[in-house]
Image (tube, rainbow over all chains, first blue to last red; front, side, top):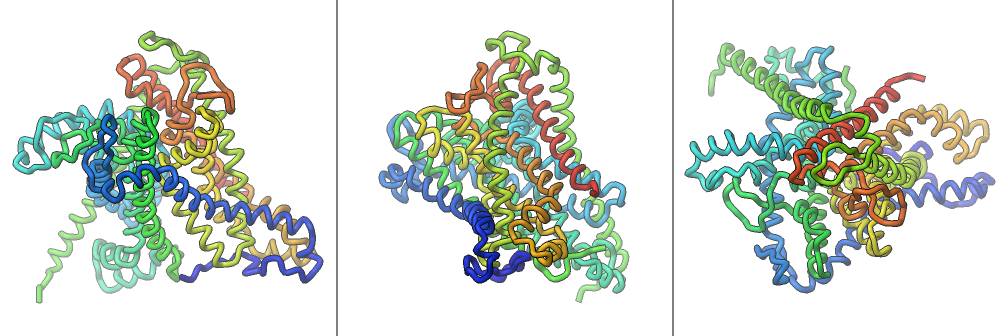
Amino acid sequence: MQVETSGPFGAAPLGRPRSWRSSNAGEIAFRAVVTVFGVSVLLLAALMLYQLAFESRDSIRTFGWGFLTDTTWDPVNRVFGAAPAIYGTVVSSAIAVIIAVPISLGAAIYLSEMAPPWLRNPASFLVESLAAIPSVVFGLWGIYVLTPWVRSPVEKFLGGKLGFLPLFTGPPFGVGMLAAGLVLAIMILPIITAIARDSMMAVPASQREAMLALGATKWEVISRAVLQYCRSGLVGAVLLGLGRALGETMAVTMVIGKTYAINASLFKPASTAASQIASEFNEASYSLYTSALVELALILLGITLVVNVAARLLVWRIARSPETVRE
Amino acid sequence: MNVITYERRKVTNLVMLGLCTAAACLAIGILALILAFVLFKGISAINLDFFIRMPKPIGESGGGVANSIAGSVLTVGMAGVIGIPVGVGAGVFVAEMAGPRLAGAVRFTADVLTGVPSIVVGILAYTWVVTKMGHFSALAAAVALAIIMLPIMARSSEEMLKLVPQSQREAALALGVTRWRTILSIVIPAARRGLITGGLLAVARAAGETAPLLFTALGNRFWSLSVTGGPVDALPLRIYQYAIGPSDIAHQQAWAASFVLVAMVFFISLLARVLLSRRG
């Protein structure tokens, strides 16, 4: 893959002493320090993977691949399986993405294509600032405002009308998978909106003008010119939101309840990898227990790395497309 | 072939544009609702005592979160001292020094690292610092937060350094100034505002993090500002512990602490934005 910047000093050959300048002690020292800092980013990523794999060696050795599929999480009998946590992580994030994507793409279209100029900047600022609200605050709001509302009317309504589906069976608890998915949806809304809006703003005006000149309506311009042009950026935005949802800890821990079982019903309490680590790590009383939780973290890291790498590759593609300036 | 009439296109247009507007209203409405809750529930529990007193025993009313605020300032401050210079250095490396391949690799890795779940970083700091020292500490929390700040800082400082006009570097080099002096005396001062903005945003992000503190700072109901001596408190941790506890008085305090935290994070973001938008 070709990467565009080589820095203002280009691909300057490192440490080839030719002039007095490169043998200058200050130059060498500065270059060394900055290089160490730069490479520390790469080292950090490598060490993170190594350290987690190393610390979970007991668990990996004891349970092998079965750890991924075993549905028992029983610290008392020293049996650990990650399947319920992985299931909870995937399902709660899926709920979040299904709810958040249409709303945030609509909002991004509004902010980029429809909002009057005086509204565009304040609204965008609001959305971006909301992405910075700490997750523990979402959790607090989730416990005292969202979950009572989810219990009644949301779960009562869903249970009454759609109770024949396995997804909506059982008594309404409030706390549970549905509440976790909803709180995650709210948390990733501003992230997806902000990145999707940036992608749409990067579409050249000429694309829109060409469609308009052909007599297209506003919506035809948006759907055929704008969304088509920046679709990889949009997928990237959704994946970044998904990555955030998968690893989100505090808000989920606070509203998901705590059960280590796979339940079809979204009304039931559940747990995610992150919430399980958060609520048990300090209580893990023997090394195999700790090791199993670290392996859970390793799995979580693996999943989020895959999602983030895919997202970045897609967002980069739009950033590097030839014309990114728009009047 | 389907004939799509002009009428139908007009209706589709109106419906879809309406849906987008509704989505924007819904998104902003939900988020404004959350802010309103934090504001109204929080502000009623805030008084001077809240900032200068220690937590009361569970169940008693009154008291404050002075220790949590101090602990947050300590851990985030230390994290900034570690994470910001290293992050800026990494940004300088990518923007000014590295060849295209290495620059691309560092940039990409930093981007991916910003997406690593913060609880994973907490476990990392736990195994690196807490298990080595044998107990929880502010230092461990600072290491965790610094790891979170590093990639954010590296990316933002690279972007800011790239905004400095190439002609300024060339002018300095043409005068016989060495590269490293050019970077230190010309490029970095020119990008000063942007770098400070990036630092502020990284601090705002770190100040709100809770998950990495669970296994590093742990939380502490008493006054402690020891760097290595044992558990310290932090504002997000206090919110979490009050929120999941049974006491109504504690819930009130959790809202108040949330208000303080959100106000702090917003203030820092706003400051960063103002700094960046001013010319000079």
